[in-house]
Length: 95
Image (cartoon, rainbow, N blue to C red; front, side):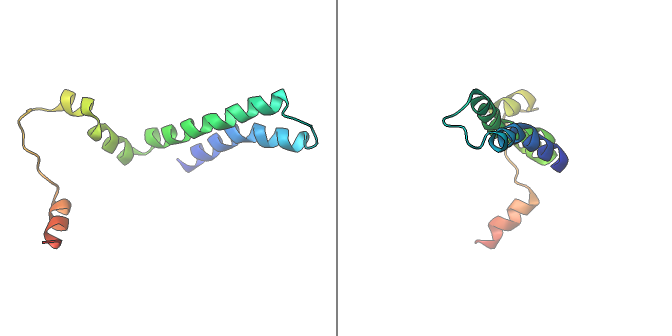
């Protein structure tokens, strides 16, 4: 996962850093700078999406939190909520 995130960072931010290094004295923003800046900003959406797709536990937790998952995959709609043993221990420690 780390390698994928690192490659995504280089792919999205590399063009902007390259343009800045090649054209340091340009007065005003150039077209290449504007385009590479938009590509770099796209990384703010791609990075969390990659983390969500690649991290198994986070993906499972987010699917459990969504309403669609609970409505579509519930066996019995009237089934009561049963907390995990770890959550039960946490609740007892505060009593």
